[in-house]
Image (tube, rainbow, N blue to C red; front, side, top):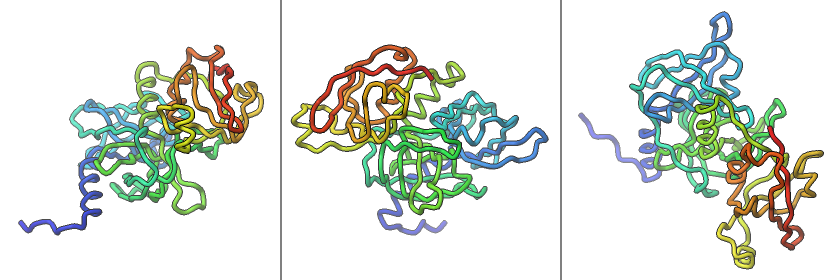
Length: 309
């Protein structure tokens, strides 16, 4: 057998990462009431006993789902639950004899970091594209008007059918679930951070739904100036830049507005939008929660009352 050709270091890095993750990437085929295919998407097996992460918009409202593995096996999958607010869904395969991907962390991602998207665009199986993390903590409004928080922006090209597939790092670990591309824009794609996706998946597996509270604000994770970090004696170098406080929502009622920085919530320094998302649990709905914001260079301590979803 001839030896594999020697690759340049970058190609070797990407190829090795793909080899580790690709066996766990699946095709997801929804079917309508008559049994006919009703679109296609992607997913990733993330547990040894056959649980699959994909997008809510790929599987929601369909009566039947077929999942195809990289080794050509095909199974009827059961929808455990889906969460439109994070465009996340969990499926269960009727077997545990499946490969599964290693889960990484989206909280440690850095802008400029290499990422790789794997999926089944236009039904072409196991298609790979690469790029970099362009921004973190984005808010993404879908075509239905839903605002999805804690989104990773990358320039890894996506196409229809990539939805639900994994975004992996250079070690082949899943750091996001690909969810969308930005309309006519080139080089702008989005993925749900894996920290959020796993947190949602655990709730779906336990309760069949996600119980949470919300602030009705849009924002993004930004890096603070080092002088600000030192002056505020912060452990975390990031904060949340508020881009909009929606009318009649908790954020607007608390007096928050675009351009302000949300630094802390209920006594915890915020490391970003992902962190805030995890803190907005159901038990905080209807309770006045202390927050810290930076407004025109001044630290302000006030309260906000999240509402139930």
